[in-house]
Image (cartoon, rainbow, N blue to C red; front, side):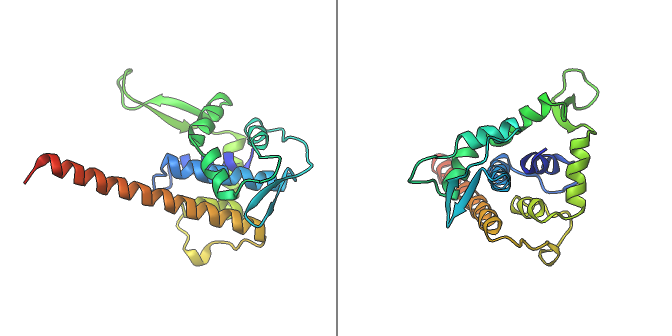
Length: 202
């Protein structure tokens, strides 16, 4: 399992009261992939630029796909640009992958056989590993979860510190991207409301 998969599982867990938006989660998943690639030596970060490393492709399929998308030649890609490019519909990609791996299952809501389906976590070693990292407040996972509004009842003071400058830079960029996405949502809501009022008339 990877940090991105652990993050997806934590976001899917029924316990968090905060519902995570797919767009927010997709951006955080892209950030988690970056951190896993940094940990594997597949990339390094120079300022806010992603620089390819010398390590071979990761064994994990989705992480391997992420590594293959890294810009190999200068000018290298900025972290923020990577988050938006790689993050497009990434939460749906992870859902499909985890369903295929048996980590998630779809069940019908209610008693009717034709009711709407909902996705549920399966009790697997992967889920237990993610839960253990979360219970231990593993700093990277906790910071990424915080970026999408999952705090597990912790306050900002309880959040474990990140002791690596590169990790801190990636997590900070994820926070900024999520806030930017929220700004876009709010702007669209205001525009749609104004448009509806025009049609409604005085």
